[in-house]
Length: 248
Image (cartoon, rainbow, N blue to C red; front, side):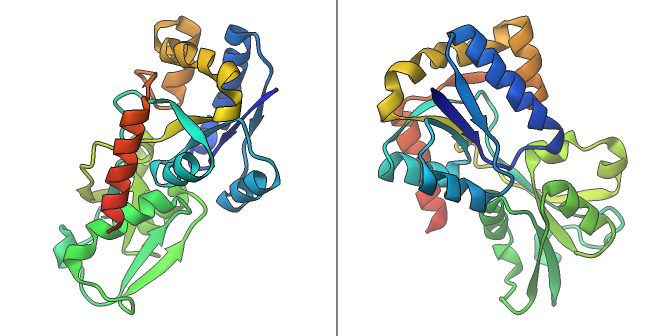
């Protein structure tokens, strides 16, 4: 039986949608697929150490090690949905640009390390040293936003598609200082080379979801309105190279 593990950086109301996607794949492929939804990144690692899963839906910063070190191959990625982040402050803050951040700055972060990495790179123009940047970790992006709104943190790092999904009441209380423009990296779905025969048929099913009424409702609820698109080995290697460059 195949297994699919989804890393915990989705919106809370998308939890059940991943089960709908899994049921859709099982029905279309006539295969049994066990869905794993670890509540933390530590449990993702624990699961992999215990027993490697057949398939993974992971962020681009984690994908490299799975592909290069653990024998995973690319399947699909969200179509026209790169992983971008926004740096936000409170709507009534007198800060209007990253360069205006001075002195001690409280920064709210989630446990999404790829979003955090990109966000910290975007903060470099502020020239804040380690003593001036006070990290305040939160469980999810909504709690990051809440921390900024309540002025428990001066700025926060939020995944752009999550920010876009906030209701107007929340967004009206926030101000975007900067949005990343990487365009080349996104979440990816991978499969282990040992299950290629079972996983490869899912590529076409996933790529056609947006064209099917039932599938379209699912991918829209996951904030992927155009669904998924094929991910080649060449494109996967390019994405890994982009991530490696960002880490330099």
